[in-house]
Image (cartoon, rainbow, N blue to C red; front, top):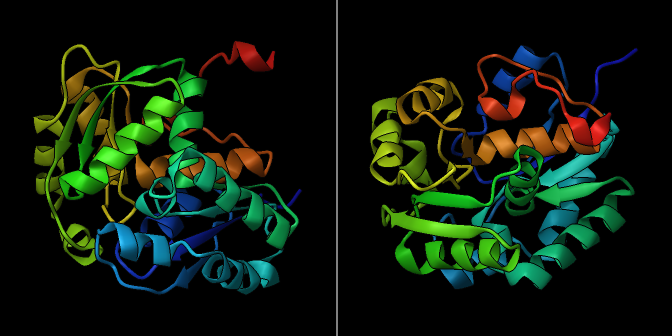
Length: 243
């Protein structure tokens, strides 16, 4: 049986190297194609970045890989549309590809539901105005955000340049004891390698943008691989919902 293939549409360039790393770790195929716009974390630019024609072009570039699912790997470029607009974005992507589709924002909601978590803290890299839209998106899905921290970083390139210790510092600083989990919502941030350390420090699951994107993409492709180094979301566990 061939390994599952989940296509990733990634904006510009920042932390896309996390996808081949995870693919090798999990024994799956995660082909990545890029769409280009500005990498500025501002509402008009993000709305432009997630335009249907951009995503359709990204989907077309993935066709040669015959993916079983496709995910728009951009949190801010999905939640900025609001809950209804973000779902429409997914529906349009599914229509363009003919396979199940999602986005990183929707993947966060799906991952929280899978783990049975509803009370979160958010450690956002974005400016506060943009981060607040993620909080609104989560609230519309019935998720309680007990704290939202904003690092105020203006561009994806700057986020991609953060060292592992800076990612750890940003995340730990914005956790709260009453939160069941910490969300780190930016696919431009390299987080996969620090998830075990973060979960050990905080004593709770940590969900990061590229992590949930990979998980959701594979789940939509019919695959649920496990790993001991990708956090609670990928841990081997009894999933009663699928018994």
